[in-house]
Amino acid sequence: MSGTDAPDRRRHVPWTAAVPGVVGLTFLVLPLVALVVRAPWSRLGSVLTGPDVLSSLWLSLWTSTVATAVTVALGLPLAWLLARSPVPGLRWLRAVVTLPLVLPPVVGGVALLAVFGRTGLVGRWLDAWGITLPFTPAAVVLAQTFVALPFLVLTVDGALRAADGRYDEAATCLGASRLTVLRRVTLPLLAPSVAAGAVLAWARALGEFGATVTFAGSFPGRTQTLPLSVYRALDQDPQAAVALSLVLLAVCVTALALMRGRWSSGVQA
Amino acid sequence: MRLRAGIVVAVLAVAVVVGAVTLRPGAARSLDAHPSTSAPHVTITVLAAASLSEAFTRLAADVERDNPGLTVSLGFGASSTLAAQVAAGAPADVIATADQRTMGRALDGLPGAAGGSVTPVVFARNTLAVAVPGSDPGHVTGMSSLDRDDVTFAVCAPEVPCGAAAARVLAAAGVGRQPVTYEKDVTAVLTKVRSGEVDAGLVYASDVRPGAPAVRDGSVRALLIPPAVNVTNDYPVAVLPSSHQAQARAFVDALLSAHGRQVLADAGFLVP
Image 1 (spheres, one colour):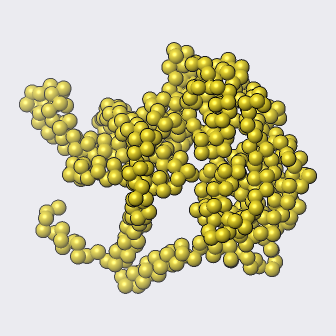
Image 2 (image 1 turned 30 degrees about the horizontal axis):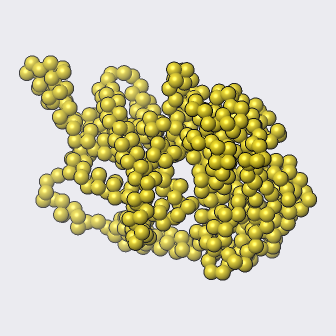
Image 3 (image 1 turned 90 degrees about the vertical axis):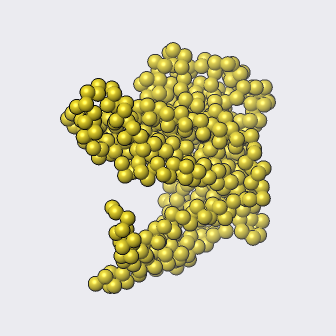
């Protein structure tokens, strides 16, 4: 796309597309505007400095960051496997990876309990060694990783499949070892899409609710993340719930704004 | 061609918006206030505390059988959630909560003086009990076991009636340790116990009475809490301002009748 035909195309949006498009935009933006309008601005300070809020925010931030790190560590090789390995039936494997993306998160929580719960397939062995996952921050990280992993894998997998393999070939022809090609050519080319996938995964982990409340329970400072605080506050003090939602919104907007440049280039890569 | 398609889309968009505006709960209710003469059919919505699931499901079936043309739509959840929903204008005809505090919050939220004109009636009482998984992994023998470092237990969140009651019982029994999780309602606590994820949970005595499903299938065992440290919750019910007052009243009358009291007693409640 050269810069010259972009403004040309912009003039030709038929209003058959513009009207529903604007309706769609309004539908997306209006709830966010309402959140800002309904926020209890006068007592925002007192609500947000409550002890449970700060511990929830801190817990949310560090668990979703750890979950993102795990996601990158496991997701990058998995995306590689999907994009480059000659294994038959990769289409099905890719469908399996997509599943947590469309699965209701609470089902993910039940599934995690079935594996890592105290009586679960793996959990019973862990329990015998004195390791209990449910109701710990580790369970929060596991739940977040489960729902966030597909975002990274699919982003990187798409980028890998669209990538130009000739750079790798050229480097190999010039005598680079496979490790050098990976380290000096493939990964640097992939970096924008990994960053994009990581931001998506982080945002998804930050907003995780269903799998967390099912698998990790809810205890202030230990497993009660910010979305869980919002849900609890809704019954007790709806205004506080709006204030907490505003915090989540602000964190997400900040993260996306910081990553905007890299994100858009990552989607194109 | 493009213009005609545009008109169609625009009309559809307007129709969606108009539909969304006119199909508010109030508008929907005024529609079925004039039912067709052939089938006078009324649906009332009853919101009830999670602990009432069994009793109200049975009672609703009885009420529907005795009142042809009446459908009782049941919604169960934490009393605090139901109260917040009613206060926010959720369409409901009857609300039954697990304590007076949450009922007060529901009625306080009603518009204008509507809340003041509603008089809740206490129809049942409940106490707490300790629920232990059938396999008893924590070797729990009573309230004092909850103070052992190797025992994990679940309670309801403090804003939920069973959580408020649990906090008082724990304090009265001198248990200084914290639970591992604060669950949204008593059903969630019982689920955590049934699946063996915790060694114990504080639930309602009605949830773990001898005939309760969880006890019958052996997944849960009940330990009684001494009356000296136990608390009793009053369950109030109220008919909310709606266009189905008569039908809503019929449901509450059935609840307060001898048959209703029997259903509640069968479900493990104390009936006043």
